[in-house]
Amino acid sequence: MKPLVQVQELSLQFDAAKAAVLSNISFELFENERVLLLGPSGCGKSTLTFCLNGIYPRELDGSMTGQVIFNGKNTADYLPGELSKQVGVVFQDPETQFCMLTVEDEIAFGLENHAVPPSEMEDKIVEVLQLVDLLAFKSAPIATLSGGQKQRLALACILALEPQLLILDEPTANLDPEAAQQLIRTIQTLQRKRSFGLLIIEHQLDGWTDIADRCLLLQSNGELFYDGSFKEAIASKLASLETEGIWLPKVAQYVLPAIAPPYQHVPLTIGAYAAQPIELPDYTLHKQTETQPILQEPFMKLNNLSWHVKDRNIIQDVSFQLYTNEFVAIVGANGSGKTSLSRLLAGIQSPTKGDIVLQGKKLPEWRQSDLRKKIGYVFQNPEHQFIAHTVFEELAFGLRLRGLSEDIIIEKVSQALASCHLSGMEQEHPYTLSQGQKRRLSVATMIIDEQEMLLLDEPTFGQDARTNQELMQLLTARFQQGTSIVMITHDMELVYHYATRVIVMEHGHKVADMPTAALWNHSDEQLSAWKLKRPIPLQLQQLWERKCTHVFAAP
Image 1 (cartoon, helix red, strand yellow):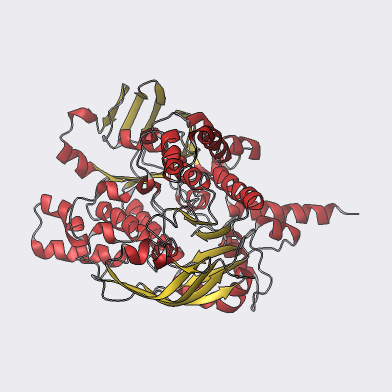
Image 2 (cartoon, helix red, strand yellow):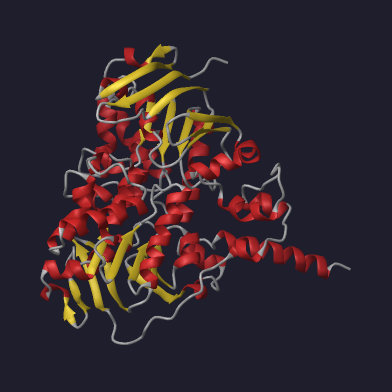
């Protein structure tokens, strides 16, 4: 069979970089093949996609050797824009792809550029919006969509062009658990109907290992160190996977400690574990001991909070209190109002109705400089908070406002860089970092300023296994020192292991507010209605107990 894509001895280096981003990479992709591209944050995965769709070397400030051949033709020989219909990329940050104001206009823009007759456009727009469950938002302004909805819109724009190769760069990172599984099912259905190649860049592998034919593994220096099945990678390359911080499927993470080498039959999915459940050591299912907040005067009070945008009710009549020494997770479906609520809490947005009281004083009464000393906010999109031209100055900015000496600033910045794996990048512009590095920088800018409350919107987005763990350890340390943490996340394992309290949002309403342990007492049907899933440790525990019950009940 003739390859759809041939990558031959590809190396790439940016002019400003000291080392190559990609080093001597060779592989092939075939028609209708499904391949996972995995590696640690910053190893060059997204850069490789720019080589596959022809952006590099045409727009490269640097040097590239080797070649990329698509359909038998070198990508460098295609005319500008010619490859964009054949190689569709849904980028890590979907906002970088948008150039129109409304959902339908964004999809129509791509169709117009490829000379699709106007008489065919409406049907195509409706078809792809139905596929990604956005038809109800057909006329909506893109700015009003949630992060997950924007991700699905970017996918719809690419699907409308019917590419031969679809590249998905962390497609489920901003999706709730149910939406993520729905997206994977949609991709499977589409591939059967339209027969395109699929390259998936992901950190969260659950659901993708079911459909992937093979995986490509990159290490931190941009070299390809494995090409084959993921199961075989666990059996033969487990040490390298752990060293590089490459995620395993969550089921495999919990089951591995109970299996002896050579790890030939590690289940990658809940279904595989259910077929042959085994008892797991208690420590693999470890849950952080929940601490009770210091229930004195609340740190923050929300009183009948509502926020409307034109004719849309984004937040509706929300009331609750936040205390010191709490680790709160705000969860719910995409578009349920989680990010909007966090922006109100941070004082970035003003409510239409109701008020927020911080330590006895309403938010509008606080000077912004004083408010920022109390509350740190990490945006869903890290670039929205960067204000300096270098990584060092980004971290030093708040410290300078506090009047600290230069020696102390240098010391604190160096510590923050080391703790977030950004040492050596002091003089890089924040926008030149990988998406995972940008996220770590955005978290570091808040941690370094020592506010009393941290609000974090998807803090682990784009992180490999190692940096994910270290970021959460940093947040846990701040929590244990008395900082209140409020975290928006779709990751139920983070909620299970770290949060002491959970607030569930649905259609702009607060529909549940309880200690974390109480959330899992709800039925699977109720959790599903909230677009949540029981965390993997509890699912595994249930399956094992079910097997034991069945064995003891047998005659």
